Length: 257
Image 1 (tube, one colour):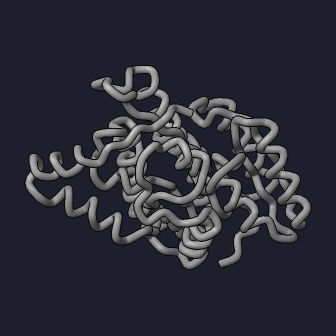
Image 2: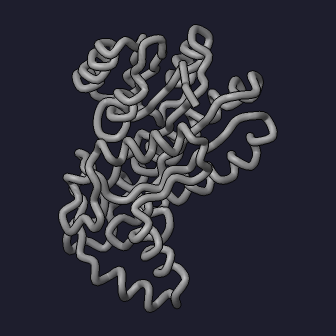
């Protein structure tokens, strides 16, 4: 499917920037949302060079009112047919700490979960009224089983996954498709802050090709890599104490960013 008006959050780097470049075709209109002005401007310039029309919004996706006003204005000018809720942040307990602290935990839930909800709740009514379009929500394999080195991140992404699954069933009769993206590790600034092993890591270009291809083909779930996803599924299905013991053996630290 070819999309002509695309909104992407978290577009200033990583997967969001790679997807922006993927959809930056002549005749396409991109609404790119990010917090870093310089990086967002660089991505926008690259997309314009590829022939796309680009508007940028420098927002924290957790701030619903200014974000919503910008989204509604963009939709009036360019009726959106693809929304990618990708903005995210991660953190975890510092070595030796028993928790990551209220500030970091709250920030992750606000950005990852409430930010995605702010995007979808603003634009879903317009897509449903037109009877077409697709929404993609980027969760994580951490949504499949809570990880001891990233409790709030796991919780926020599990919320994104559940919200996306529910919205898919709700919106399908209105002609709006929903893709829930469940990625593992891929090369990005966020992955660089994970201090430890990166099992089955893929390149950023490969991740964007998998996600973009899945969206274009209307897939309900886009999960990769399957081996890591199945491992976490297995850890969720076995007795909880055994799963906990296995996951405690994975020593990881996430530097806040």
